[in-house]
Amino acid sequence: DSGVTQTPKHLITATGQRVTLRCSPRSGDLSVYWYQQSLDQGLQFLIQYYNGEERAKGNILERFSAQQFPDLHSELNLSSLELGDSALYFCASSPRLAGGNEQFFGPGTRLTVL
Amino acid sequence: AQSVTQLGSHVSVSEGALVLLRCNYSSSVPPYLFWYVQYPNQGLQLLLKYTTGATLVKGINGFEAEFKKSETSFHLTKPSAHMSDAAEYFCAVSAGPRSNDYKLSFGAGTTVTVRA
Image (cartoon, rainbow over all chains, first blue to last red):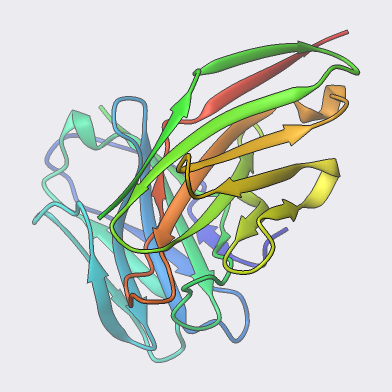
């Protein structure tokens, strides 16, 4: 158990819908990362937050957005869902701005878009 | 920018045999390098990492990796495979100490199966 929690574990929805994925980092970790794992794209970095502020953006679609709240939990919002958005979404956390620090991964949320 | 290439998407070894997973990286700055393992239906767990200092890095579960700058490689080895090593393994790179870019760039992964 990494100490990072993600809810829900599974999510099944239809095209065009909007969903919210939630992540609670390890206690004391200030930095949160979101990654997408799909069969065709592999593991891709989406976005990073540090202490409530967006720190870095990766291959994140404009239909996707995220935020980190004052209690440091983070939410990833996916809208106008398409079949291709079906994937495993991971959240990771680290104590500071990572660098060489380990990123601790949650168990993931498996999103299925029908 | 940083990227990683993992050679071989599937590796099959006999129990007790050497496990060797290959990883080559590309980075415009000195990198940090990582190996993660993913068991079915679980998140990623760090096996080991190279940041600075000793180029031979020892990790959990008997794994080790050697950073070779001249070969831009960070291959993962374990002398004797165990059935519990069956999993998917990911090599990852991030920009090193001269950068404030902390995201991980992952390879495509190598699935390891262990034969009894």
